[in-house]
Length: 110
Image (cartoon, rainbow, N blue to C red; front, side, top):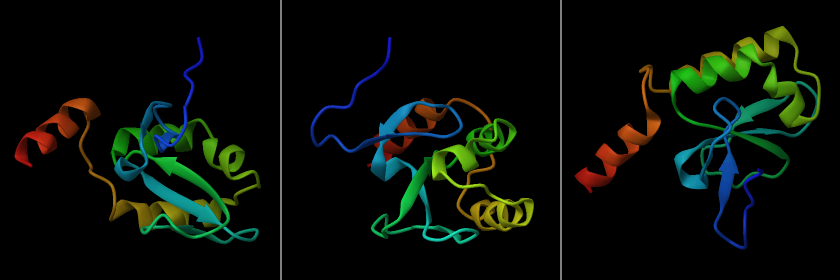
């Protein structure tokens, strides 16, 4: 059964794990023109966007499944994807494991 988003709950689907998460918990990657793909840290830029959990597992899965071209609705060259992965390396936690457990631990700290 397909999950549905209702109203203004601001949930987006991750490219790697396909889980619905709150928009604030995900990284947004935006595109404006062909071969112009950037990380939208403020999540306010226009253009087509894709969302990704800040975990290495999701990043690797999105590349293996070739989700970037589909979600951004334009072909992504190998060079552009390599540049994007270099940028994402700074924003991604290089851990493996359960993302829910990590977020629960952060919620306890607050």
